[in-house]
Length: 217
Image 1 (tube, one colour):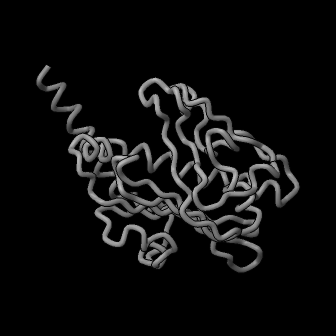
Image 2: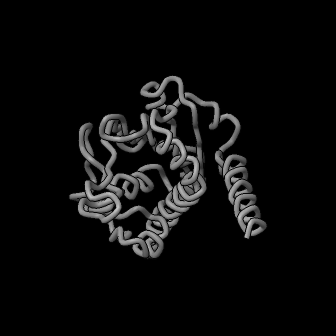
């Protein structure tokens, strides 16, 4: 039994180490070190990740899907089957809807609905900044949240009608030990889900730009 526990612990440690090595998945060195809107809200982060994908569609196409994100809106463009396996009731849309095309500072982006068993109050991010077609900055901070951090998304227009889609997370060290441990344990899951989200937005934008119907995740 002791050997099994040691193997499990070693496997967990290896997964955490692997997630640290891939925390800037797809991002160039310049993107990782670039100052981005929203960084100023957490000027001295203990943790920062930058994940990026190339989208073969204009920035405005990617933005139309990004701005719809949310459990009670267009979904999370990630692994719906996995999110719904734990009862989050998230369904990624395959259409652009006008009522989801507008976010303003102070709005909420819900990721866990109210009434969800383990988190009955739900979980949402406050919109801190919106620059349509370019930047969406989401905020979490005490006392509402255990972490002080930002989750921001950035569209950088490139050549030939393409763009780069970046997601950046910056957080300070949580005051509560339980929150620090939970954050570290969940890091591999968060990275994988965020990476899939960016690819989901990329796929939707590219299919719509080319006239093909997007698939639902």
